[in-house]
Each structure stands twice: as C-alpha cells, then as structure tokens.
Length: 78
View (cartoon, rainbow, N blue to C red):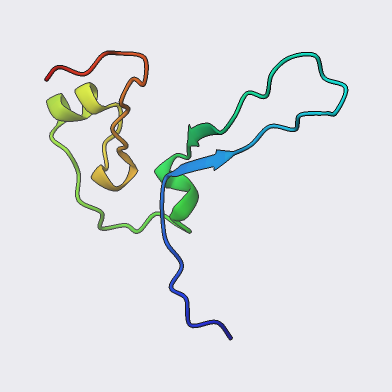
C-alpha cells in the first residue's frame, strides 16, 4: 500500500485532448469545481443548520453543503 495521504480538493483539472491534425492551438488546463454533496455518503440527522434568512442567501440549509463560488472572470480588488 502507498503511504501517500489522499489530498482532498473541490477544484479539479484536466487537459482537453488536442489531436495532431487540429488547426487550433491547444486550450491548456481547464478547471472545474465539484459540489460538496459528492463527498458526503449520507445526510446525518443532526447536522447543524443555517438560520432561515442566512439559508436563503447561501442557497442551502446545511453548512456542510455550502460551497462558496468565486467568479473566475470577475477582477479581484487589490
């Protein structure tokens, strides 16, 4: 068995296939996010909850299922 710890990340990446006869330049590495519910096997009955007003703003009632979306196209303020 390997002694390497598995690194958990919600951001995954891949390199699209670029054929030898493709006239376009290669795209490069593409990134995507996976939702947190993929990593929860079942929903426990005693999960903590957001308040109703906060749940409406976040889009979910349970903090374990909340994933902040950062717009990659929006310029960051310095």
